[in-house]
Length: 69
Image (cartoon, rainbow, N blue to C red; front, side, top):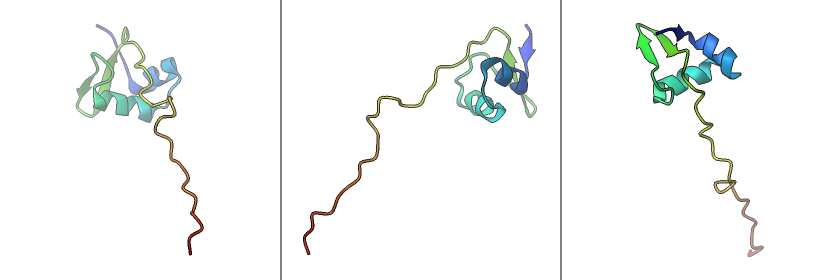
């Protein structure tokens, strides 16, 4: 089995290397293994789905004062 480095996977998936490291640590990249202090990512591994929330459900709301003195 052939492996990619974090930098190679980041270039392939158009991501930052640090983001790929975080996804490996979270277990989101299937088959990724840590050898000493380097992540080895299988060449056939698919890019994980974006885990950020896009629904807008968790947006902060701005509270306005009621004007009570």
